Image (cartoon, rainbow, N blue to C red):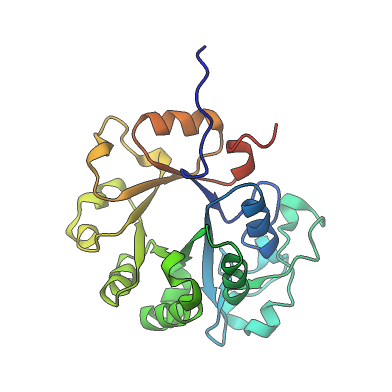
Length: 248
């Protein structure tokens, strides 16, 4: 078989940091992703009880922190004392790694001026606090890296608001493929559009899209190459090092 070019860090997004080997959405996971060569990193944001952005995917604390309760029931100070070690997946190997605030992530990204951060605004906190509060709190913290922070969400309306308010780069996460042609999504004119790779109709002519398509749930080099061959420019993966050819 003819040798192919290695995957480039210009086309890969580290999903929740280097999640394959480290607990997701932690300072450690993001730092290790960047060490592996990531130029694009994605994180998830929920709001604490005192409406402070924390880097966390779930609204409940069980899977990631191994305890009962909900993110919105605890203050930022309380959350920052909790582990974010994914006990079912990783055991107790990273029990010392704690939940990170968005402030912490901003400081990491400030130290790496070549890195772009995708910041997903989670629907649970939008529902709990409302769009205006969620957008205002996250935007305020991201100001030092605003030009390198892309706001994304499954909630199209909050991204429309971010665009209307002049946020430099935005993108939606598609709920279904048909939405890519909807007026609601097209009116946003997002720089990026995230979509689960499993729902992309690969027979379509994707080269004519006016947005940068980012396919997520890409776990192997083989799948990454197949999607790239279908004119999908960017791929999001939990295994950033593996897809860059740094391991195995």
